[in-house]
Image 1 (cartoon, rainbow, N blue to C red):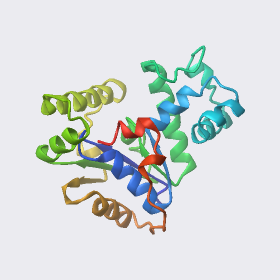
Image 2: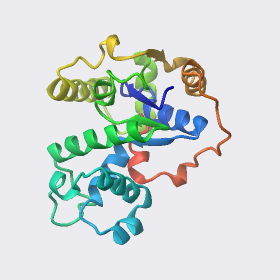
Image 3: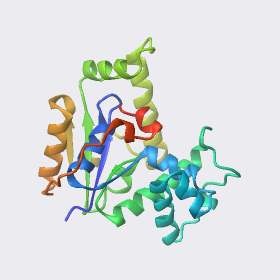
Image 4: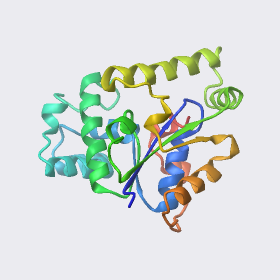
Length: 225
């Protein structure tokens, strides 16, 4: 029985939106990089204060605490850094803990860096790679970043960052198809791809209300690609 799905994607292929669609179709929770960042940002707050800032992030902080993970040791911040750049190694350490917790927790779509590598030996986790033709990726990036003068270079740089992260921390090529159970071209449509993923793993779809854009936190709006 599949308990979790990981979704990695080429930048500009719509992978973040795809992960939300899959989670919504299945009625599962979504753990993406934005949620990881939000957990980091509430890491030094006490539980009531963290819940006021971000109830979902506070809940995942509680899940980690229940597993014996001390967030203050992983994210040694003095005050919450809501608008500052997050420290690289702290982010990686917390991402790893959250991915493992999410897979154990079950009924979760994981779209966080390195999930496919951490979960490749688990038989209850299904790993997906989403990709798209360069023309479609460029068009999507131009729509979200109209001020970008050289979109193809921008896409190469973002994919290169992903490749370097996976190679540095997991010693793997993130485009190695051996990491994935299913590789899908999103040019057929994100809703169709989401349906294919659900049907492939044999999970029934649940009737869930679509996620309104205004309900997304700001970091989601900056990471739609």
